[in-house]
Image 1: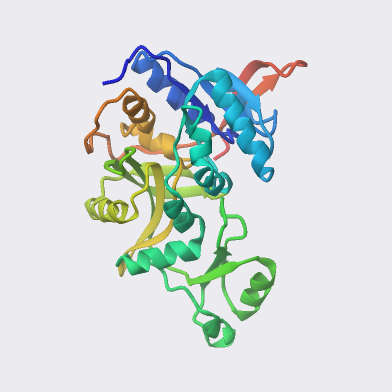
Image 2: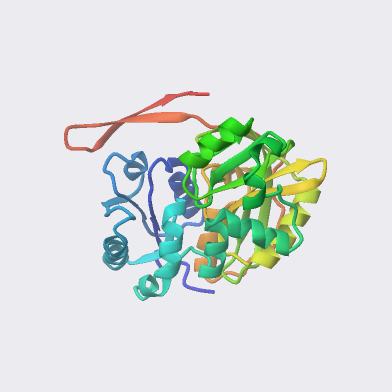
Amino acid sequence: MGNSRKPINVLILSAGRRVELINCFKRAKERLKIKGSIVAADASELAPALYFADINEIVPRISDNDGYIKAIVNICRNFNISLIVPTIDTELLLLSERKAEIEETGAKVLISDERVTRICRDKKNTQEFLEENGFLVPHMLGEAELKNPEKLTYPLFIKPRDGSSSINAFQVHNAEELGMYLKLIENPIVQEYIEGTEYTIDAFLDFESNLITAVPRVRIATRSGEIAKGVIKKDREIIEDIRKLMDKLKPIGHITVQCKKTKRGIEYIEINPRFGGGAPMSIMAGADSCENLYRLLRGEKLKYTEKYRENLTFLRFDQSIMLNEEMKREYEYEGSYF
């Protein structure tokens, strides 16, 4: 086992509104009596999560690939970072491609290998991977089918191949709408629309891709693609299917999987190889990915566990903070928006 007294500093990238996640890392660190800081980085000084971290840093936008990576490397060296945690889809491929370069600083990037990232970041690749490995997915329409929109069965669902946060993702009710969305959305995929109970599964795997926790939760309500209300359910069928999926995919870290239970079975919608916005629900239920990461960094060996509570209902809400003239946090206000 590693030296538990050695400071472990964690860098949260694209911190944005991830206040819950930062607080989860803080609580895990305190619970384990680990020394270290939470560093939050974002391109905007108005990202709320910056003001809940121990240290905050402003970095270039991800579109400035070299500048973004250089800034991360500098933060790692300046603050002796042990772990880098990405939080949004658009940085994942860049981080997986430049992982070796960043890890020369001694920090570990919580990113799956480039093969996994390319499968997950392109929804067509995700669909093909799932089909090839025997998992159920909604039928994806080919070019020949789309040439005869009047003959299709509606509703359908359309979304960008590399989309995120449900941006430009729409249910399609007729041929006229399909034509409009095909012109509007760049690089779209079109699938049948499936009816069923929608689940998000938070899976956590160690650095050797061994599954440690798998937590299904029913999505009751969403906002901007993120869960707003949910219920933890130990659905045996979903848990066993996720175990098979993770064994085939072999990602690392916290993985967010979306699926629906339909009359045909468990049908997968997408896989996001990162912490999802609703991850704190599973963490607070007892499947604590933040604590697991600290334990792994201390050199501990983890085993698969289902020691989390089920039938817990989570209702997410917004908070407001007030910054003074020097952009320092002064007050925090709470308010429910759901």
